[in-house]
Image 1 (tube, rainbow, N blue to C red):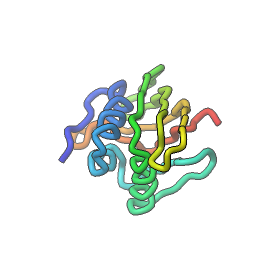
Image 2: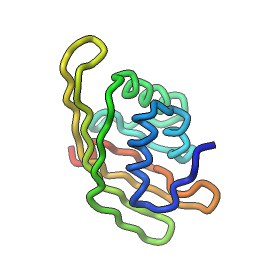
Image 3: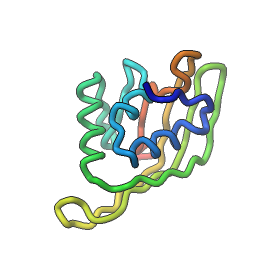
Image 4: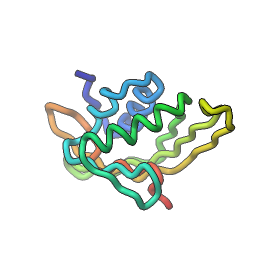
Length: 126
């Protein structure tokens, strides 16, 4: 089992570390069981298999992600994390790829699992 994230300001950084390590199970461990993931603006998905498939597509780009945490806000065991991210480089098909966004992620904390995403919205500002 992946190490729990104990500080909200580390959640997006843990996502980037696991993404860059191509650790799909580690990425999934950052989600609650009922997470809503928004892999494209305005197109939320839910359910373990669907979320896993969407994350696999991003990992399939075989490019690193960079993450810059801008703000975290916390009230008790609920938090909002806002971070800028970029994925750039040459895609597996040889095309140049430049993806970027500003997340607006809702997270919850419990002692067993640490901070995890309830809503992972990488295109939060669109």
